[in-house]
Image (tube, rainbow, N blue to C red):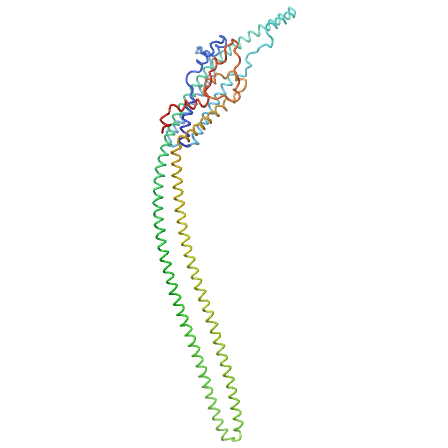
Length: 483
């Protein structure tokens, strides 16, 4: 519950407190009535020995009411701050107690069937008696006398019950005034506590705003530092990438030279082996040729032909060896190309990872900037709300006063609308008890015509309208309106 709601509730409760004694006003306004009707509401003295069960019941209810108020006061003093739910529960309890007391008053009034009246007038009854015989007339007169005696007894009972009702209404009015004064004091104390809590909240919010501003400055400095570090890291990464490219190129050249030298060495070894084998073959052939030359001179031609064949075979072997060497060179070239492709893919993957890291750093930087802008917007919105609340404080207070007045008026209207229709004629004393209460749907009935010719304006004063009551209620606080 805010401060404006509490203040409006206090003012509305203060305005709804009845002033003066309603019984005296009623007797003054009804002096023109006959003594038999005025006697119903006279404050006559009663004997101490005479019993009044209704008054005793209302006194017991008043003691319960005081006990409830004392408990509520103890709760309010024991706790530094009370929630709106507890306050609303206490108010509901008090208003339910008030509605129960009003129900008791309605039960005291009765249903209007206390007096048994005849449907015929006195002259009509005389005409009927003239038509009857002597015995019937005597019986009719005896019944009429008995009815008159019963009417007198019922009239005395009605007088006694109305005196009891008058005393009960006085006790009830006293209890209501006392409870309303207690509620006003307690609500004022609650409003003061709420104002203190709001001031403390304002101080804490100011400290929080200052702390957030400091955090914003720290985040700005951190973002600038991160930007500088990002630039330096980017430059270092580019330099490292260039150095890595140069090293990879040099490494590839060295590896290519190593493979080339290894292949050339293998080729030379193969040629050396082939030459050695050829030398051995030639030595064997030379020995055989010498032996053959010594043994068979005639086989020189055959040997020459064999030598020719061997030379052809040697050529074919050399061609096959050259083809094998060329195939090996092609395979080595393919492997080098594959290695170069893998190296390029590794470089591309590293560049992609570096770009992803750079984009992540940019995203974090953008996120920090968005958080900073959101914090600035929240601070600006909070300042605007505080300024709007300070500028439109009177307007908000007026709205909450109107809402509290409407809520209390509807509560009284609902409580009084539960009174049965037979007790409406006897409800004038309750209307005097609550002079500022608006009439409900069941009470918008004109009063009956006065048998002595007095106008109804003399008997009933005009109730002030809602705008007049609001203007009268707000006039005692001009300095608050100036603030």
